[in-house]
Image (cartoon, rainbow, N blue to C red; front, side):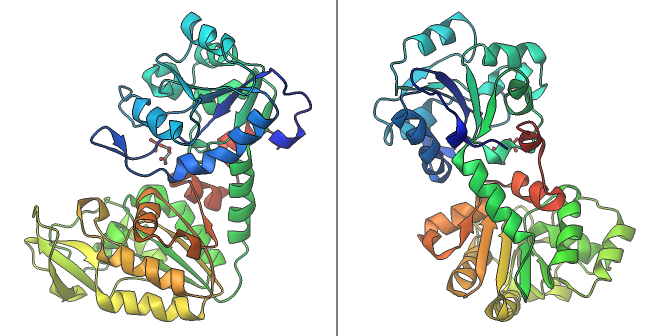
Length: 377
Ligand code: 3PG
């Protein structure tokens, strides 16, 4: 990949920067600016060299969301930032034309146009039409073969931004862990995590599987899981993975009556889940088990919450965040809820590297590359 640093002429040149603008928004305001802060070094570099900086990014999945709250949050860091309520066409071209050297403009949510997700060539061409150079700095979306990720580089000279370079460098190190090594994978959706689990079981000495992901394993081994969330994964595949002695699973849970709206439950051993209950977090014995391995580890990799974090079952996830923060291991972490937990606890500086990627981090670890990175080569 060619680095943004290798661009020879930037003075007055319009540069399209694909940024990680997909941040949590609550009540119309940005609730976590981690990704925005990580976008700043590339933007600042381009401004310092008097480029005209055009930020493009997506937010949400519906195709109706607006980047306006993200614009307001980003303006705190870049007071001169401008916003254009469309993404392509004459109005967007005009807004770019009016940018002074060193100016920064944010265009509206790319996913408002179906062409983005469908990687339509005409949409990629319309985006490319806005600038002379493309910089990929949205590592979080490099696993998606979308127009702004893999389409635009077909039209413009393309470079990697500082964040993408750092992600690739740090996550490549995670593929060569110092021994003893511990990987912790939580969250849900076995299907999307199966490739990375296999890879980590080959590379790491211990791989703990928590969160809803563990429910699939428990169900396959005939243990009670009540009404807990499962992804319907293939039982034979799960049993094969369970035969691997590196795999660690929860030894206790926090459970509550299915459908409860209160974020509290009771701690039970894994065989004691009632048919009307759901597993909503990992329990204290499980945390102690992870802590025992973390204490000895030289490398710890973590992605995904241990409990139903979004609905308030945060204890297991926060306890693990503290365990890793206080370990002497080199720690590499990522994933939306994982990063949110760390930010909320104010312990970000106690981790060696925090990835801005969720699915992208896992895919990179599984495959060693991503479509958005290949597009730059
Ligand atoms: C993320 O948050 O993981 C990326 O921005 C990709 O978003 P998506 O999962 O909606 O494609």
